[in-house]
Length: 590
View (spheres, rainbow, N blue to C red):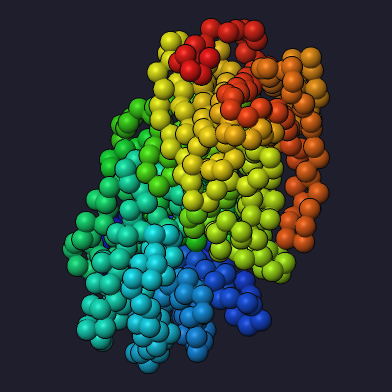
């Protein structure tokens, strides 16, 4: 991803952003110098140790190339020696292999002239025997890591390609075989971005898979001069906007699917900004970089993204201008239909609502189709608790990666239907064979609105289901649900998870949190029951506790062969017209 000339340029790159990134790189490298060796023994999988060594090697190698400080070179060589001494890089969990190959490949390449020949041979041999050769056992056409439509494809193929390109002059035929396989198969994973850039595995796995996709692009460009069009896959460049839209004014993401908050920054946003010539894509990341660069060494505690040194390569100091105007209403189709509405991009107290479609039957998916999150007045009122600990689920015997209808995965609170803001009928689960599609709606008031067709998620339960979400002009939000029953009556249950203090009012409910309030009005209030359930404690062995979490459940019995409607309006305390009814939905939703 860089040669001697590029490193020479980086040394003299002296704009404010570059200085801040360099300061962070040196802070991280200094922390590594006094850190204990990475522990490879006594861990169930090598993924986390090799991620740690990857971050160390990147920081140390970049710090050395910027400063010529021999301390960084010595420690980087030590990290590479210890990694190369392992007899296996975790072939039973091939993500580990892909990550280790990036560490070894970049370390070998960036420090090549400073590493003695015997050490170079040892590192190159480890790449070949621990990564490239074992990968040849993978069979294409099985939806495994080599050709699946999920992040493993991008991570493993990119990592192996980095390793292959680093040793290509030693074994050009093997390297070509590895790299060409990646070029052939990464577009399969890339199909999930089409057409608008949304990503089905959630925001954190978006960052993971997309980062390695970018690494592959840049590795190919630097070595061969040709990315093979991997950045031109439909929706891939548009996915930078997806990342922006998924974050609410509270700074919290839409935490659907298996969501892990791991890093404080997102380096690939600088790559997208440079690639597209859009400074607006970099603004949030630049603010994080400046904040981190002003923090003490103890405060950063190696928490920045392990790919942070790449930001120096991906940042273009000449990038200027306002960039693209961000839309307040964004709707994406494809594998993961999703819709986002917000009242402002600049007001931290703005109203923000995001709703998802899609299917539970996809990598890292939850049973959360139709679920939503809502921010207003600086508070996240409707929450998604994110993912459960994989280790905890394994220990409880949960079939972690089984997405079939009867999978025990759905018995986990955070993964299954219990832990999401969805509709339920007779307490049944959603149908994993179904998919929720989202369309924009035209309203008489001009307020942004989307309708989610949920019918296929409730096959055999009701005949038709739609959820409409509208952000009104007074910053209130309307959640309007309509369903038609079949030959049997059903009891519908409407779920809203919140960390707020909840009380029942004559009109519905009142939520209070952090000195703010949100009123929920319910129509029809007659013939409904409203309950506030404490779901803060762990329910089963596989479940973590959820401190402060409550679940509002509104139940409504519906006779056979009828159509029912339930409308819940969320009115922020700051709304000027609490009783405003100026919105107008299409007639079938009124």
